[in-house]
Structures are given as C-alpha cells and as structure tokens.
Length: 594
Image (cartoon, rainbow, N blue to C red; front, side, top):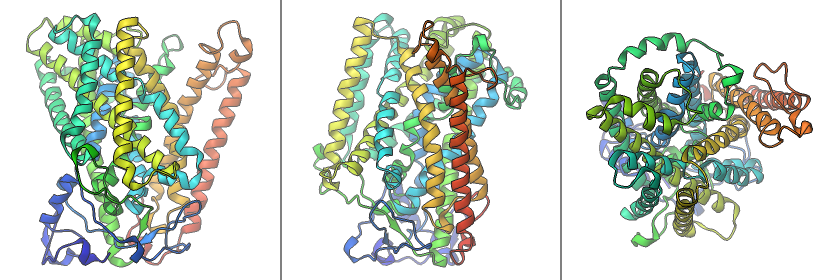
C-alpha cells in the first residue's frame, strides 16, 4: 500500500500545535484524524509488499514469519486517539483505586502512600512498553511473546484466568448496589450479579466493531467516576486529609508491621495500583484495535451477529523503512501514546484513588477490616455519613467503579484469550476471530453467572476473597512479563525503535519491584496455607521482607529472583549497547525516555 492509499490528498495537516504545511508529511488532517475516534483500519494487500530482511534495520523475526514493509501512518491529535487508556482506567477503578488502596491506607496509614504512586508510575512505563511492539509492528504483545517462545502465550492465558476468571468485581458491585438501592436484600446480591453479567454480554451486541462498544462505555463511566470523586472530596470535607500526602509520598520502603502484613492484599494493591496482571497485556491489543501506528493495518474484531460485513484482515507484523519521514512519524506516535496514557490513565487514577483514600482515612482510619474493602465501605464508612447526598454519591461511585472494572475485565479475558488462540491454534484464521470472540464472551459470561450464583446460593466464597485471589495472581504474573517485555523490546527491535536508557532502567525497576513482592507472596503461601503448620519441609520456604531471616527454601526463592533480575538486566543492556550505531539517523527517533 502506498501513502496515497492510506491518506487522502491534503494541503495541510492538523497537529497539536496548529495547522502547518511544513509538517503535513508527519501529521494527518483534521478529518482523517477524527476517524480515529471510532478506530481505523487501513486495508493493505500483503502480497504486494516486500518482506523485511533479517538485518539490523528491521525487527528480528526468528520464531515467526517475516514482517511486511510499508509506511508508518500519519499522526492524529491526542483528542482523536483517547480510548485504550480509558478502558484501562475503567479496569482499575474498582480494584486498587476504590478497594485495595483505600483499605490499605485505612488499616495502615498514609505512610504507605509511597507504594501507591510508585506503583502507578511503574505501570505507566510497563503499559507503554507493552504498546511499543504494537505501534512498531502492528502485532499484539502475544504475537511478540510467541516469537520468543510458544510457551508464553499459554502461560499467560492460564495465569490470566486465575486472575480475572473470578467475577469478584461483579459480585462486589452487586453487593454495593443491593445495599444502596434495597432492590433486593444485601444477602441476595447474587441476583444483581447475574443481571450485571447479562447486561455486559448484551452490550456487546450494540455495534459491529466490538472494541468501539467497550471504549464508548468506559469513557462515559470514567468521566462520571472522576466527576463524582471530585465532588465527594468537598462534600464530605475530607480534603484536609491531603496534608498527609507529602509525608506518605516520600516514605519510601515503609511496610506494615509483620503482624499486620497481609502480603496477598499488599501485592494485590501493588498490582492494582493501576490495572495489573492480565489486564495490562490488553494495552497493546487495544492499541492495535484503535489503530495506533502500524496497528492501523490490522483488522478489528467484528461481531458476527450484527451482519457486519467481511472480516478485516489480521495478519503477521508490519514494519517501515527508517526514512527521515517515517522516523519523525514514529517519534510523534510514541510521544502521543505516552501523553494519552499519562493524561488519561495516570492522572485519572491519582485523582479517584487519592480521594477514595481521604474518605477511608477520615471515616475508617485505624480500624481492622481484614483487608475487606467492601465491608469497610458498606458497614463502616457509609453508615458514618448518616445518609443524604454524600452517601448516595459514594454508593454510586463505588458501583460505577466496580461495574466498569467487571466490564473491562470481561473484555480483557475474551480479547486476550481470542488473540492467544489465534496465535497458537493453526486452524483459527482472521475470518474466525469474530466467532471465537463471541464464543469466548458467551462462555465467560456463563462461567461468571455460575460462580456468582454459586457464591450467593451455596456460600462458595465471599466477594472480597474473589478479588484477593485475582489480585495476587496479577502481581505474580507481572514479574515474568515485565522481564520478557524489556528483553523483547531491546533484542528484537532495531535501534530506532528501542526504548531509551531511562525506560530500560524503569523496566529493570519494574521487574525487580514485582519480583520482590512475588517472592514474598510465594514464600508466604508455601510456608502457610499450602503447607500447613505441620509441614516443616514447605515451611522452610518462609520469606522475610528483610530477606535476612527467611527459611532455607526462602533463600532459594530470593536467589532465583536475583538470577532473573541479573539475566534481564544483562540481556537487555547488552542488546542496547550492541544496537548502538547500527541504523543511520536512528537518533532522529531516540532519546532518554524514547
């Protein structure tokens, strides 16, 4: 496909800074840019495109098919591409931001706030690095992991199910809705849960392109949640709690006392200082569906029940020649991606979560809820408000946050799993993606109904326990994929597409950060619930937060974590050094945080 095939004739281009004929080769027109609001797809004839050779100029393709060479699409404005991060924000609101972290702060203190904002910023780097491969090649991150080893997509699918396969957000949101409206007794929350799962399934039938449906719904929920949170901090008079933020924000390394340290809940909070786990892996898939960078050449998943026409092409990756124009477009796309994620995801999280923490600290500070955020809100904080508008808005905020998270979680599991099946099952082609997606959506919805109904009718589990299971799985999962992502983006991408050194170091930090807390959780589970007090062999896997004082098996876990960290740093650092100077004019697209 030529540039004329992807872009209409234009005399000027609309950039974030205004109209300029000098940049018309970089930025797209206002009209074409607006098309991104509904996601875009540029159809291309793969047979007419040259295959990229295995040279330093193009991504390495060992373990997969060759990349096809075409042009990097022109760049729209940030207002045109808001979407993937809004879905990610929706996936975050009902977990760490309104449940885990407000509970952690209430039971502990503002001194733990450092871990929240560090976790959010860490996830900013993780999520945008997960998008890098997609923007550069049009492939999903699962396609990229499959090029490293066919083991990894299956690993993340299985682990992803352990994270999001438990409809704890629908369950908790339903309990909140029942307590709020009284439409059913609170003990019969499962009825609302079943209805909410059905509503989510039905919403996917609202349009032909399934990504657009989810994006539009989540953007609305995001704006309502942020607006309610801002009003509540003034309405409930908790703005004074913000004076505790500076001290807590710089209280690096502070952890709860050992007697109060529930590592599963704390790791869940770290994983959910943002979306976490399997959810983060969707960021690249959503970027592809939206049409970011080379993802614009990949087709979108359509709903076969809507008679949406022929399926759009989903194929192996694309790449571009590092010409001056393409390098400038890449740099502009990368800048735009970071802006969209920071302004939507990071700022949104900081606002909603911090306000929720001010409320929990004010009305529930110093109390012990066993880590149960639902109990904290419904049985302590809301009754303390004495009814009125404040109670009503808080109920609404909690329900919106939990419902938006379950909505996004459903999307995450179905879309990620469909993409993995496409990567790993040869008989599944692009024409089958819509049917695979709809089939997984239906099975996942029925599974959610089964778990929710069983929880309510037979007492299989409490809603909060479902959230803790998912959160802990999310935190452990982030350890390997952080390492894999930085290795992938340095060893398989050419110099001009690689992350800058600042981002490399940030991903080293992310790998070590989640590795540390994952080892604490694994050790705690092996030495406690898994082993039992009468099984000293497994009890030796006890791990101490200070490392010193761990059991013999615990020290082995720490050594394993150290090996993973050293290997990750060596391989990615060596690749960065080896790539230096291999692509002419690569500095056009490079930078410390590129």
